[in-house]
Length: 102
Length: 172
Image (tube, rainbow over all chains, first blue to last red; front, side, top):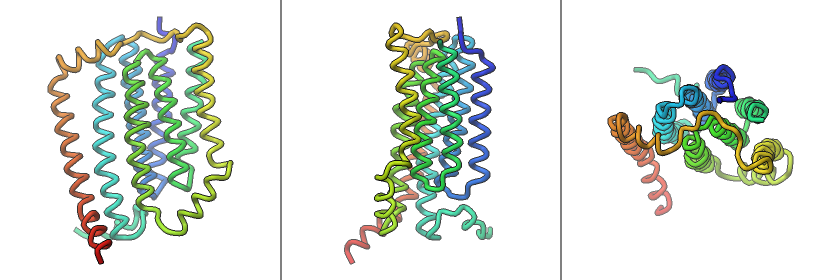
């Protein structure tokens, strides 16, 4: 019935998630960090879709919809923060904000 | 057949993501990120989640990436941008993403030539998704709308000082 084994789909999702995590950890450009976050959220959605397709339930796609909403809100606020940081420090380096003292 | 397409598309997705996190220029990374999202959309289609595949292309690869492009264009200004623009028009940078996109396009053409539809997994159509979304998941939809409202207010609040600054800048 289902030609794609669930293990392969989950494996692809794990690989994409780890790649996104590496991007978040390695890159210091704020825009690139946000883009890697998108990859991570997308990989999570892929895992939900694979599970939903395995059991033929609609819940996987609904979880993907919620992840999509989360990604949209996160990108809006995150890019606003990136713009603010660029206007205050004139750089997109994430390390430039490290001197904040509480 | 479906498995072969799945393998090719997975390879495209992983390659595009690796290229994305290793690009130095944000716009080049964005091109590869769009390819990665598109190939994940193809995988959604192969898994039988047609509605999610459409949403992936329209909202992820369409709307969210437009936001990124806007911000990158807002942050890059001056002579450096013009030089970059000149460099982008030469082949070499966009040839990688174009090749990956043509692989996805060839997959679609192959599916159309071989009978019009690929044998996907268990199809969960949009009617089932909608019935579940506005049935047991109604509270989640309300919460998602609140989240989007909060995101809207937050983005407006963060971008507002800049709007004032540019307005006063044009006046003086």
